Length: 134
Image (cartoon, rainbow, N blue to C red):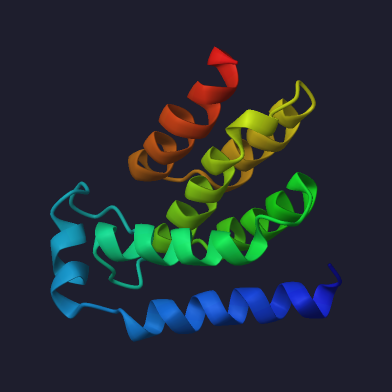
């Protein structure tokens, strides 16, 4: 998959996110974080995030794990809670393909992008947890 194809996939996901923004969800997210804690969110309900992640994964699952991890990293880079959740959903979906070298990827994500408890829960309880269990 070349850079242009990755950009198309990411653009499609972000358009789907825009199509599912729920203004009430933006307000709802705030109550889960400490006062003064800034969290970037597009404003999607969790069910919509999972629906978008699952549908998009059907399009990309044919690609090598490393390519999907690159797409995940781009989603993480956005800093948005919703996009990080999609990245975590995808990386968790690859749990049967985990190898010891993948730990460096997960460690990089944790060090560079995890900025709140929700990011940590999504990545560590699912992706990293499954990695450790394997």
